[in-house]
Length: 105
Image (tube, rainbow, N blue to C red; front, side):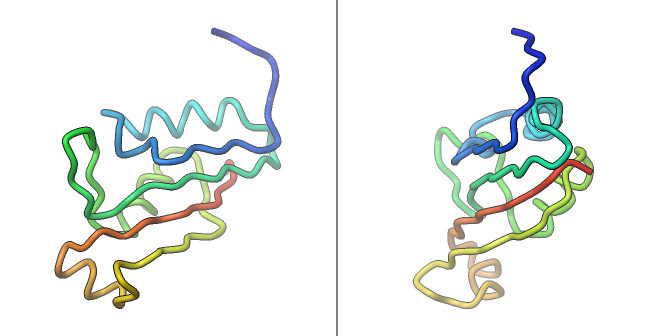
């Protein structure tokens, strides 16, 4: 499917962890976004599940993934396991929901 339409807003909820190549997915989003578009993505850290193919261990992995695939993170919000500090969640491998707002580089 090819389209010349570029979007001002792209939303992807809980997709990255379900695909084999999240970098390829992010690069595809950049081709669909206009230069000033906002791209909203949610995913999870430390959330192994049978259908989670890509497992992220910490926010830095997500920053590198976005940086390496044409997206600049404007805002990243972590929703922590039972309100515990991020460092504790990472160390104990507790799940963390992550919401990211990004733009094309």
